[in-house]
Image 1 (cartoon, one colour):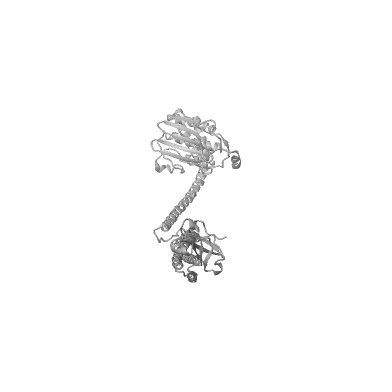
Image 2 (cartoon, helix red, strand yellow):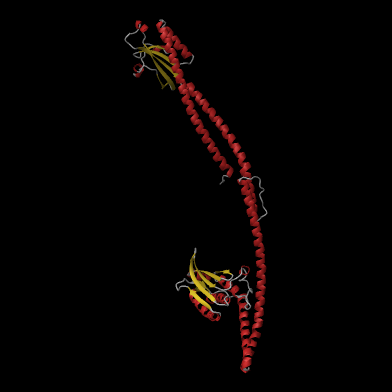
Length: 492
């Protein structure tokens, strides 16, 4: 099925508008001309009737009665009238251009002809044509008494009929000329509008469409040359600006993707290396730990303090190695419905001793009726504990650690866990790097805690974000979709 293009739509709209305007104009002109010609023909008939009245008055007084017929016949021959009659007061035809009517036919005259003493005129149909009819009463004069009854006010009337067909033919001819001129105007306007549309609209739009096809095919160097400063020109400039912005964004995305691939390769290599190193270190470290335990049994009271420090350092190394192994080779989560309160409560208990050492007050703000989420219990507890410990370490001089749980009404119900501290905060330049592996601003630590937490949250279908202000604290948000049984079964 063919689709009408823009040029066709505009031409059809303009054509219909012009045709309607021409039709309305022709209708009104035809109506006005018809009325004008009818009134003109009627006025001419009235003038002729007045002239015949004056002529008949003079002829009848001079006793040349037969000249009336010849005069009416001459008017008929000159097409001044279609038919002429002179009737008496009873309607009997005395003179007529149709001789067979004389003294054999009678006309029915309207009563007002002799009562109102005025000229009457109108229109009637006969033999398929329109006729304008004029009736002029003949008033009785003193000199008419020798032939007519002196008591009668009128001796008769003049009846003239004039055909409207010449006027109708003229109006019809004028209407046809208007239609011909209208058709010429229609064609001229159509051609001019078509040329303007093609020049000002169709060609520029087609140029834009061609460049759009190039962009769709992947060629972001496509540009449309600007040819005007009107709306089409602004459209062209907007298209060029959009494609240029798209090209710049695509290049940036490509560069970013390349950097991410390179970074991912580096991290994978580092992970493999870290995993190998961790395995190589753990066995000797286990032996060192066993040897330290043996030395602890035989050491003096003075040496026990040194042995205790060695134990602490060994535990620290073991914790670092576990973090490296968890980050380099994370296990797949075992998704089950989880109560967020049951997950947070034991982690707060584990973090409370460290909080007490630095005078940090822990405040838990979550209700027991929060909806469950679908996650791996152990992994999620590890992520929460990492964030809690980081928050406590950010408040070396004491403060408040708030854990808040709430339900967000989004398109789908979402559970948000907020861990907020009143610590030193994170500078803007470091905020984008806090989830990077091995990044830390502390004197101790591996910089893997938040990186592992983000990996766990994302693997469990959640999102983790951070808001922070230097000197006023940090808030970590973890959002998870509310649990649905079919979702948990699908993830298993």
